[in-house]
Length: 376
Image (cartoon, rainbow, N blue to C red; front, side):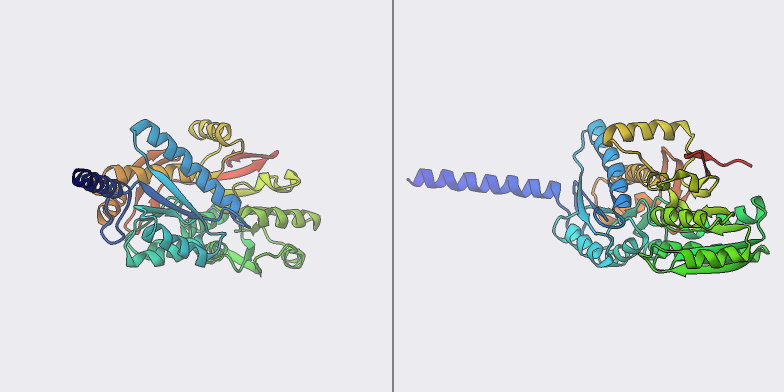
């Protein structure tokens, strides 16, 4: 009996040591950032913004699965649904670092929830990278914050210059969602840059998030006889606004930002989008992009968009930084992210001192229900 007891104790000790070793290999201490195979994802998978969240998740998963297969690694993407709510996003962040022991956070998706996560991450200095957050305040939170998408101010500046210099528009109207960080950010910078160049913002009409009737704002805009209408909103609203603009016979050049990507998928009549122009992260006729979109559709049975491609490349950036971080501690990962020099589907990417990407953007014009590269 004594021998049996001693043998049992030896086995228990051995099993405990194995368990401890396994725990060391698969979990992260929230203060030291020890080795982990878990990457945390936070984004809207249900609700109004779910189309963006699922696009980002699919793109990230696709790269992660390919990377694991090619490199013999076992990284896991632990996902939490924020439902587009900032408080739920922060709650998910805390679960990921405190309970799931995630080595880094891939998220959020929308600018508002991403800013909330960035702020919450400062106490732990968690490496955070978002594929799609564009609001300038996101990376201002700290040196641990990075993004794959160009910023709202950057795209707004380029849009303003394009409107004045290329479209030769002297008079512009704007209709935007006053409850959207994205829409407000683009509107503010566009207006500043465009007026500084000598342009005239004839009217800037706001509406509340969730509104579906824009007749009043569009009627006022029509009366101003502007050259260009800026619609810096996400694509569901864009489709509604352009449909109602057509019903009012509002004949004007309409432009927008990267939030438009995917608008063809929700427009009941694609003719409402004819000749509309928006800035985006890629040229739709780039062969690398074309091939990738085919692969995405084969994998998921749906069309990819800028959110999914950005997520694919951004996950590549994160995994490259993790590969260069043998100890997987926070400072090591953050330093390697800051030194990024990455070539992906969307071209070459580096980060500036703020954690914002240095890269090119493209202008897209919709012709006959197809995204094409804009040319004069």
